[in-house]
Image (cartoon, rainbow, N blue to C red; front, side, top):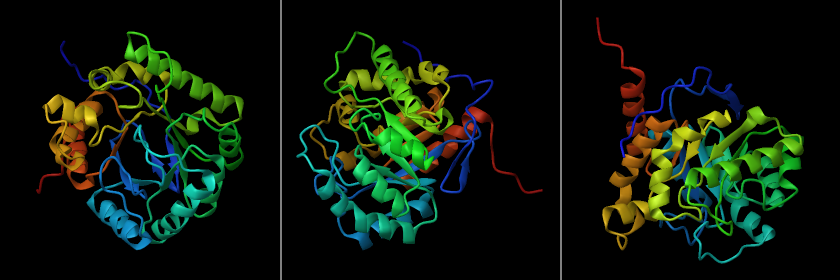
Length: 293
C-alpha cells in the first residue's frame, strides 16, 4: 500500500484560543509536551516531585513545546485504579508548579470531572480525556459551563471492533462529539485524538497513522499521541527495549502523522519531535527560513 500526504483542507477548522494563545490550524503543526505525574508511566518518565515536573515542563517549552499536557493516572492497560481524590492529591501540586513555571497553555489529562474542575481552578487551560467524555457524565457539562477547549480521544478498549480501524475510530469520535454538543460544549472548541494504541493492536495503530487523513472530514483539528508506544517497538522487532529507546521510531510516526493531516503531536521527546514537526511542515507547505540578503 502506498502513502500519499493528505491534501490541505480547502477550509481548515477555525482557530482555537487556548490559554490566551491562538492555535491556527493548517498554518503549522503544534507540539504538546507530556508531563507524567505518575509512578507507573508506561514510558518510564514519571515525575512526582512538583519542582522536577516544573523543570521538565520549562525545558520542554525551551525545546519547542507549544502546550503542556499533565496527568496523574497512568493509561497503561495494567495500571492500578486511582480514585478522584487520590488522583487530585497527586496532581494538585504539580499543576500549580507548572502554572508558575511555564506561560504556554496547560491541558489536564483526566477523565474525572472532580479532577478537571480543580485543575481548571489551579490554572489548567484545557482538558485531555482518554475516554472521550464517556467515562464521567459530569465532565461534558463542566466543559460547557467553563467554555474551555478539550481533546476527546477514541478509546477502543471494551468496545466491539470491526475489521476497519478507521470505521471504529470514526464511530467513537462521533459519539464523543455528540456527547459534547448535547451538553452544550461548542463544537469549535473540540480537538479529536483517534487513540493510537488504545484498545487496538500494533498493526492497526500503524494503519491509523497511514489513514489519518480519512478523519479530516469530521471538521475538527486532529491530535496524535504515538510517542514511545509499544506499536513502535513491535514495528522495529524490539518490543523488549525500554520505551525511551523508541525516539527514532516515534519520529517516523510524527512525520507521517503530520503528512496525513495531524495538527498536534503529543510527545515525550520534545526537542527531537519539534525538529521533526518543523522539517515536516517545511516539506509539506514549502515553508523555509528567510535567507539573508
